[in-house]
Image 1: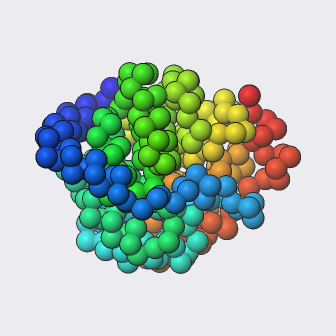
Image 2: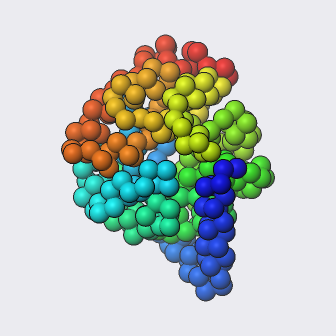
Length: 277
């Protein structure tokens, strides 16, 4: 585990402790059960027109790049993304390392009519309930952040019980094997090395060959142009998740539109035919 990830998870452990305080926990559980049904995040990524789906991310900063767009308005950005044709949103809610808040997600969710992923470091079941309570439609489960196989499976199953999509993020073959064993059907392949922060789209090209057609796939990191998105579409990804390039763009709607115009290969030629089942 990288030093940065270890620091983040230590912070999350402290946050989880607070969430488990009796009054706070009871409030979260009550809110999770009372919240309106989520939208179908996974279905939104299977575009019937043959185009690559775009998950457009609202992200203020990152540990590796520093400030990206500290003053962004989540509602304004979300509406621009939707206008550009984004299939879904992703919103960072980690405050210490990414400058995000739960309020950012709620503002973005209220401003648009497309599904929203809560992007955070989920290590405990109370965070899954919280994700539901704040109105998200999907939760991120980072395999590297949940090293216990039973826990990874339990978190994914809880998300399903709460009608949340679980995007399970992997960086290598071992994490991919663990995620599939946990029953993941929505997998994000992150091409960023967690230790060096180096980015290499060949990681995504290599790992997608190990996935069967019934898994919905998302390429994450290192996608900054329509050419990068086309590269991911050509090897069979259903969607791309893009953050930095969008929050730094002069015209986010136009940038999303360019990404969303990328066409995947025909159903008989794309990944269904060249993956290992």
